[in-house]
Image (tube, rainbow, N blue to C red; front, side, top):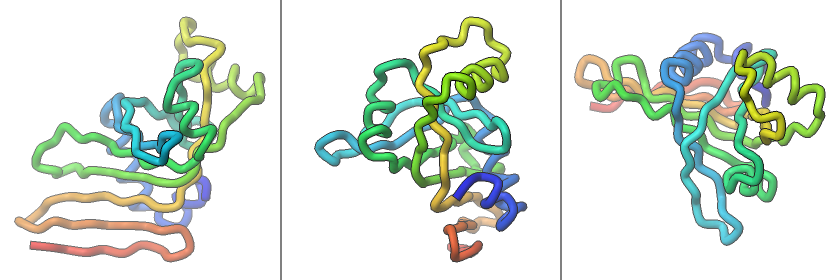
Length: 156
């Protein structure tokens, strides 16, 4: 599902997850290598045209991984050790964007004239999202899965 669909189905959770990702520039992306083992890479994400986008340098390993197997997991990598604001994660499938016009529009939206025009670009489709926080000495996990809605678990 697209980010807008997630946002419509779970607006409060989507807003909090997005805030976690927008609070910091660098995040952790998990992809699958050719042999099926996991690869973890640093990455940045951006919201553009209502969707979540991930870019990479040309011929990057994470881009190769996503072209071979579109599945990903993305972690907001919070710096708040108390998890007051939350630890957000999204998973799904990365759709490679090859339309030169759309790539140019996205790069222009960054406001960085030095952005490489040969960047690889992926629009992220979601299968699930979660937000983990700590409050009142309890761990709170709010999760959403496509077609299943939102659930909330508390643990002490």
